[in-house]
Length: 348
Image 1: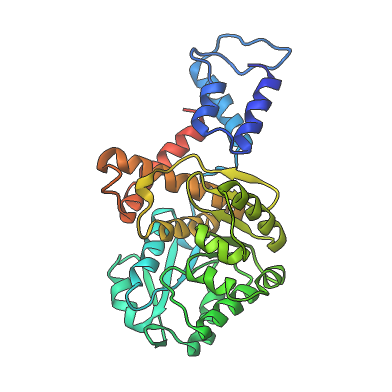
Image 2: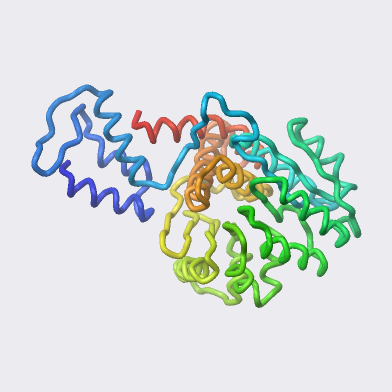
């Protein structure tokens, strides 16, 4: 393959038109050789040398990234994360986000949740820290607003929405945090519904103080966009436009999830129908937040998070089957997912 041919294949890969597997199948010859250019024909070479060269080519042509740790790093160097959510009957959602963040490499993970949900969230894992908030009607009370502002300032990345529930005062609290915090924020579930409740949410996005990732499923996206769509393609086009207008990264979840910042587009090629299960989106929220906390930009974190989320689900169904997959299984297979992605990027 000459340089021009490689660039054409890489262009398709960057646009999400072909998967990582298809990319490597087209770039990797069936037998060993070195990567050539248009004026330097391929010559036989060692498999290791070839893998290194192609691995570098993959790394340069995709936003997929595996965060690297320094040998002398400590837990504060790889992300202090705060997740805000949970309510009576839905405390497991925010626990899943926190647990997924830990499995995705976050150094410190705290869960801010209504005080009555604290024992249930704490039981998810002894590795999670918890921050009790004043509650009302089983949800975070408006009196918790000042406490939340202090907690947010103490952390590097914020994830908000899983299991949060809806109350007018709670919606306003979400909007205030969204508009004011300088921290990168990943918004999911009822945090998205809180945004959609205000016609001015796009203006609030433009006034925001930090990067934002929104992870709507189709129903949530319809509410955010304030219109309906007659096809998935139309919805994807609207997502790209809305990401540009709001200056956010939007992850439009579903089959071949779209990740876009309004300029770049990436279609996730991993995942399976077994992942259509309660808690799967909460896991993704935690993963993306963890990758941001380890230094990835928000677009690369969203792309890598979606890819790893689907890949881990694919690895899980090889053992469990589609019908038996649970959200916790995606978390359990994250170590294998990270290993598989790392090997792919390295060209092994």
